[in-house]
Amino acid sequence: MKRIIISIVFILVLGVLVLVVNYVIWDQSSSQISQGQPIIRKETTKRAVLVIDIQEGITGKSSTSDFFRMKSEGLISVVNRITDSSARNTIPVIYVKNEISNPLINILNSSLAKGSPGAELDSRLKVRSDYIVNKDKGDAFSNPLLDSILINNDINKLVFVGLDLAECVNSTILAADNRKYDICLISDALAANPDSLKDVMLDKFKQRGFEIMSSNEYVESLHK
Image (cartoon, rainbow, N blue to C red; front, side, top):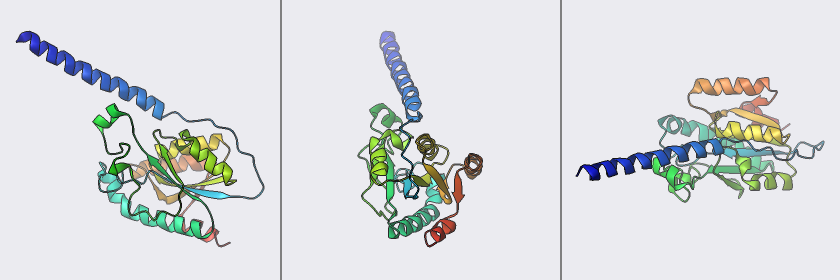
């Protein structure tokens, strides 16, 4: 009996160890920022809007975050206004989704598991294009499809909305900066937990020379 108990304990400890090691490796890999090739600069500004990680498993019904679920209604309303105005002005709107295919990570949290309802775009989003980029890392450029869409549309300026400003949005902004895109952040269409962290991140990006606008300022700029 004692041997059986020891064997069970050993298997449980080994299982936990495997999960921990797998998570550490996955976390390190998912936080890497891609370098990419600098884009070819052109005189005419061509924008695209990146809508990042507004998904059922983050802001929607299957969300595990009370904070983002509470923020979701106001955030999505602003994002829909931005994407609607952008689409009417022939500015491409690209939707980025986080999908986790690692089975061991999904044991810990399956809210964004590939193929699950949580991995889908939040149903309240008014989807304005067929441009949907799936990723399994923080940096959306980890999927070469994003580079391809932007290059094919001669984009040289990226407008960021979505979440989390301190996580996936941050990683994608850094990767975009590596590629020499002009960067604009819509302050009231971005979220980070807590709100104070969002303020810190926006100040950090402002100091780096990135453009910070409100949604009203952005929409008004489209009519100038």
